Length: 488
Image 1 (cartoon, rainbow, N blue to C red):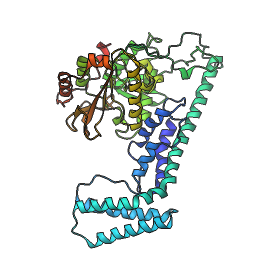
Image 2: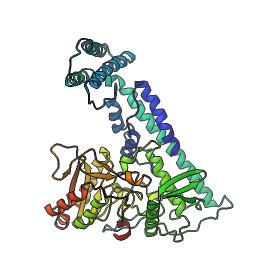
Image 3: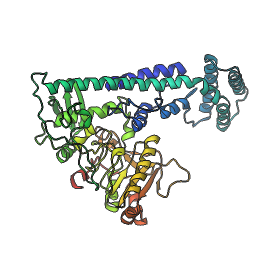
Image 4: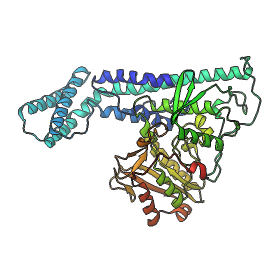
């Protein structure tokens, strides 16, 4: 998986450059693409999409199209608005001239662009609002023609990214199967042939307490059902630098805060049933940290926004007032409860993950859902909630936290800048960087069946305590989730 994620930015910039040299890939676009693709992916790789229909991602297509012919930014001052209007007119004219556009499209775009430039040269007394109105008019006139000539190139970008992902997924699977075949036949003389034994897969009991797996089904050798093939754990070195645990394997080092390292030990003790002596613990922690490091990317703060978590005080209020003891979207690094769903059962299952939430089917219980902000994933989540609620007569409740993008707002909405989230990089960030103010409002939605409403209904008193728990506090510390130790 690493080669794709390392090469993608370079390849993407090359494709973007074919559209316009001034356009960079949208921030976090690749991470959002991964989320959107995995909603529909039927492939084998836990991270890389390889079997999606349609091949072209609607999410990535929209994001790229929004940046054509230039990326629009937030404007504060009049001079910025004037400069942005000029750049848009210039870029639109340049793109239509360099593409195989129809005569009518060329005529419309060139006339509007030249008219705008002429207006800019004549009028020096315009206000910021005048410039922005003119920009909106120019976008309405030129936008459809410019995006039409860019459509094939944008589809090429989306298709190429997918084909790269599918190819690396295929290579990885072939390599894995080859290694497992060698292990099963004892081809490597220094590796014993594994003995038959039980396979622990995920099961969902009708209560919110369920059993994590330790052997993902994708690593069973074809033709040998029930026989897990696992290589011996590699040697991973551990040392501490102040409050940071450093794990090294073959020259590559991953790091995690000492507090989160202790949390992983606790989760592993609760959940892992095949390694009572912790002989595989360090290698599994290394794989876990490396997986999320690769998924996030190497840029500063890249991907961490997709892993933001609720404050500890909010989780405590959810547990007290609504009986919540399970997170629908979390990871071993940012979970508060020791029961949670996450994207990667192959690495996270040893630490308590019940697998992807869209494959998790509880019948009873109270659950918190704070999904990554990906529209396709959130749509699928709501559909899954509705199906589960329709099928169950036992108390079932989902409390959902999503960005407040709607107008009018929902009954319980936490205003922007008046609440916080825990950083998605909480396992490696500094203590004073643990919390950040939300720049958007947060809507809190309660999806419950009749029995769930009777047991955990959002009464005014309960909502008041939940809202109070969300208020920023200067006294907050880098807690990593006490409920991992005390809550079932």
